[in-house]
Length: 167
Image (cartoon, rainbow, N blue to C red; front, side):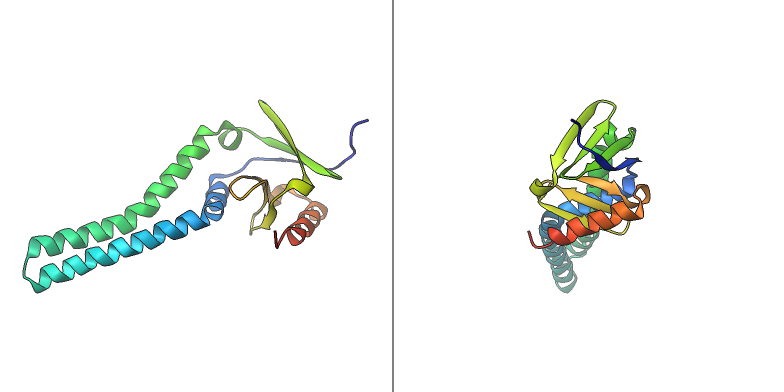
């Protein structure tokens, strides 16, 4: 006998939501990257200051330009990499996902794939301003768009977020 479905939604995940999801799951890497960026920028600006004090204008200018470029392009390259992953993943960029929420699990169906995951195996459920992230581990999860959810489903997912808060 098939399990009774509590909620069913259809959704399309916009790039901005996927980008915020990638920023969220990559917080540690981003923190380390930003730390390296800051250290490199400080070194570059120190080199620029040394170049100015020693009256070596080429060194000063080079260090200043490299410091600014690195600060700017670090975020640009991250966004570009996320956009490429989004476009390469047809389930995100072109497909509509159908999610079903049951008593003990949820399933995701897309025209080419289908998967089911039990709630008790979820690593964490995270609520953001426009979506929930049903994290199967620290680096992977399912985005659930709030605008596709009923108030009851949002309440259900908030309960799971509270339950998994300290995992």
